[in-house]
Image (cartoon, rainbow, N blue to C red):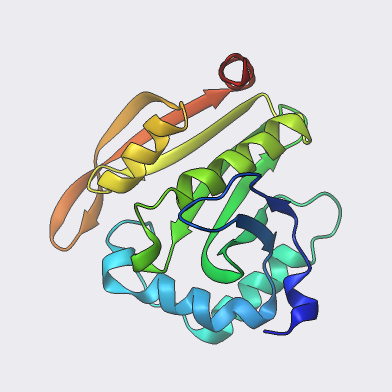
Length: 193
């Protein structure tokens, strides 16, 4: 990755996290292979929705669709970087600009970078952007019940568990519940003090 590419920072943490800054950058076609590798990884796949394999061509096409929207983007997907190293991806999905709500998603694909505060810092940057700049009123996210790290992250970021779909996903021959979390503008604003 060239020095020129590293200068494109969309959002960045003000404080050091695990001896480095966390930044969010626009995802691009050159990220396709890395993202495809993360999504196809069996351990990652057990914690997120995809069931079928994703090819590099499919990942290129997906990135092309989300980075070249016609009109207002329905999805905003950003790479998560720690010390200029691409460690994951995060996004706002199904953005509704009229009713001002969106779903969030996060994958720290580099497993060695989990449980270090990078995911929660990235999530907080995205939340601040969604409420502070896009004017969202409500954010929601879905978490597989077997994804302990993601459940802890939602709690750490102040999200409320608002419901559960029982036996929603079949993963590895076992049914897994889907947990629903929500964060409203008012809750975010109160947390900000």
